[in-house]
Length: 94
Image (cartoon, rainbow, N blue to C red):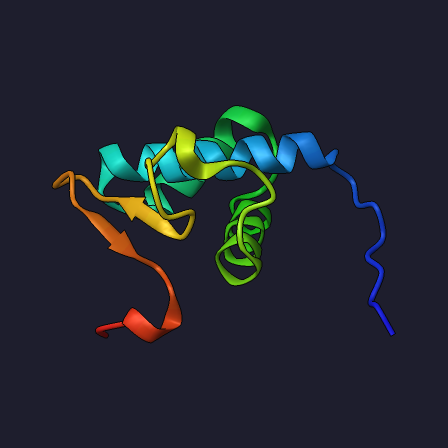
């Protein structure tokens, strides 16, 4: 059976925009948490809410085209050094 989520307080477009903004800001700040806090301050939800949206996209994959942020792999993220890093669990080096 497919799990259905309740609509939530924020529209899906806002959640998608917030996640895009976090990935973009993370390239400049070098810290995902700083990027999350910055986006939360600008858009209104709590940093914890934005963090959960980001984690959901990292787990499920983006509901939007990430090619706008990083050409190529939809699971890649650019860091402040300009290199793309694969976010898939198989490539985790920590």
